[in-house]
Image (cartoon, rainbow, N blue to C red; front, top):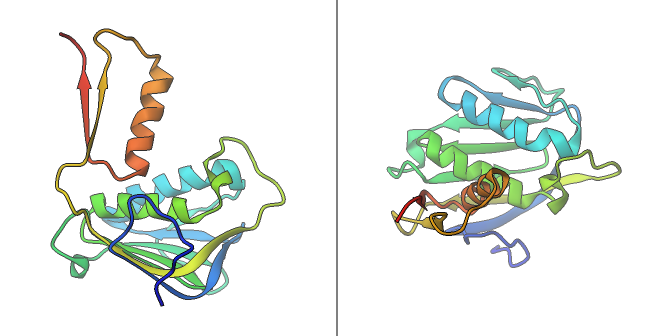
Length: 181
């Protein structure tokens, strides 16, 4: 069944509702090995401030701990930026043929959480749910970029960092920074 209530930017190739949501709790682990380890650590860094959860990044998790699993999987496709995201009540699995695809999957996962996840401080009394979905996506255009011209108008460093973070959240893959005329 196609889901009409999940709003993601950019719109993925497919979004299919599959059942009950995954509830992120303090018991959750992020499971990542080898090439996916950097993405696992980044995901933990994204989620810790607002949730306050430890979210350890481990190589193996047992059934007692709900898990978010990150896998480098060449079967997902031949585009390094492609990914597949499977969410059910027990686990979240992010698969991609390369680290670039896992990074895009992380951004989609963040968009599936309540918007409070973007906060820099702890949010209490929040149920961190991720809808039960299967998402498959790949870029429709090889060049998706943003431009910032600082040659005539200066921006503070925190603004530029925030701009780059927003480009990444929306899966832009190029940043054109005009420094001088």
